[in-house]
Length: 120
Image 1 (cartoon, helix red, strand yellow):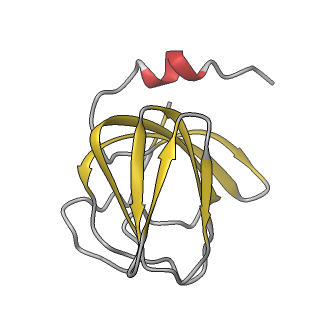
Image 2 (cartoon, one colour):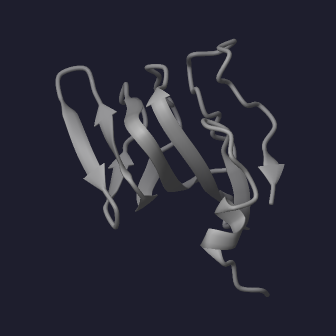
C-alpha cells in the first residue's frame, strides 16, 4: 500500500487522449489522462464512467447539450449515453471506470483507440 501523488504521475507523460492506469480496486481502474482538442463521439454499452477534473476545464458534449466541467468538479456518464469530451486548452482528468472500458467505446478502429494502457 503506497500513496499516489497525482502531480508526480501527471508529470510522467505529455501525450493527449492516452489514459494511464494509476490504481485498481474492485474491478475498476483509476486512470489519469490529459486531453486537448476534440475526441470522438462514442458510448459504452456496459460501463459507466466518472470524469473528475484535476486541472483545467473541458466540455462534455452530448447529442442535445453540453456540460462544462471545471477543476474540482466531476461528471458521471451513464452506460449507453453518447458523449464526446472537448477541451480548448490542456486539461488533466482522473477517470474511474470498469477495467473493461475501452476509451473510444463503440467507436472502434479509431486512431484514438488505446486497447492496451500503460500502468504508471
